[in-house]
Every structure is written in C-alpha cells, then in structure tokens.
Length: 295
Image (cartoon, rainbow, N blue to C red):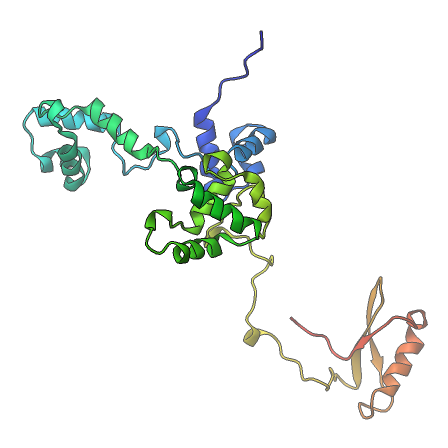
C-alpha cells in the first residue's frame, strides 16, 4: 500500500502567495514561513506562477463580513433593531448591513435572515466557478492557437479577435485572459508549452512589483544632469602648471601629476613624452585623458 504524503497546509500556502504578491522573493518567503525552497517552487509551478483562485477565508479582506458578524446581524434583527443601529454596534456602514439583509431574504427563507445560509451563498459568489471562454469555444481556441504559433503577442491577438468577429462580443478576449490561459495550462484551455511562443519565453508568470517596491539600479542617490560637475572640453585641469593625466591599461589604471615644461600651449606632444618617460611599461594598449570626469 502506498504511503500518503503530509497533509497540505492551506493556511501556509495562502500566506506564501500573499508574500509573493507583496513583492517578497520566493527564497525569502520560504525562509519566513519555514518551508523548503522546493515546496515554494512547486506551488508556483502548479499554477504557472499565478496565485490560486480559491484562498481560505482568513486571507480575505476586512471589507467582507465574517460569519460571526452575520450571526450578530441575525440576532440583532430578531430583537427588532434597525439597520443603522445594527451597523453602529458592528462598526460597519449602514449600506453594508442593508445590502446584506436585502438579497439574502429569499422566499424559501420564510422571510428570516439565516446567517449560516447567507455566509454560504457569499462564499459561493466569491468562487465564481465559471469556465474560461477558451475551454468552451473550440473555434476561438483554434484561432488563438494559430496566432500564437505565428508568435503573435496576446495584445495583437486580442485586437485581431475584435476585427475578426466584430458582432460577437462573446468571442472577444482581453490580453490578460490569454496570458492566464497560457500559464494555467489545461485549466485555461491552452497548453502551457505555447508559452515558448511568447517573446519572453517564460514558463512561469513573473510577478510585477509596485513602484515603491522596485529595487534601484544604483546604491547611492542619482543626480540629475544639471547637478553634475560640468568640465570644460579641451581645456584640461590646469592647477599651477601641472595637469592630471591617466594611463589606462587592460588590467590596471594609473593616475599621477606631470609637470609640463612648455606650459599648456601646443597640441599635447610634451604631455605624451612625459607620460612615456614615467610609465614605460604602459607603452602598448594605453589611452590618456586630460581631466577627471566627475559623474
């Protein structure tokens, strides 16, 4: 008899996806949660780099009513309290309580608000278990596959579908739907091998970071062009008859002061002679600059 593996920890998996969506890397998220890297990469590969559509209830936003809040609404409603008073006791908006009571009172409920039934219906609406268009429509799926084989981008395919079927909005797709169908594999209606036809060629979806979470290119603060030190082209750094020059080799850079006998007039012949006398070992493969550029 085959041995069963460990039970899947859905709460840890949900927290893992929330860390990825907040901009944390896969390795760092695994360290924070105390799971192995292989587990984190396996969770990513199962969904093509996309978070699962169904997450446990604790991961939902605070703007959704909890089961305890719905039970309190039912209890306070039985006592005859009004909508505004119920909302004040719950710390919610009156429109939230009114919207909660209105659609849940159906004929088979006998005009009584049932908290458990209302909570179950709310969860079913959040799931939205509908099939993708590419799974239902074979002709639409074939058209998208044909264009992907031609290495069209999802944006081009989405625009092409609107031109091909202008009077059939049920066959119109946005580019994000095509991306999701590719990275979800059989769930979305397209084979994941078609991701090789994309210009990036990534087999997994790469999460986008927010503007305030992007890593800067430089360690220090960058300066605008107007704030940089501007050098006088062709003049050189003249300091009491001396000039700084640099000799650049393939493996080392040497910088030192050289005294010019004839001042700064001429085409720099004396400068080259002095440089060769100082560093004869750099007689080949060198270049010189007459000033230090402060970037």
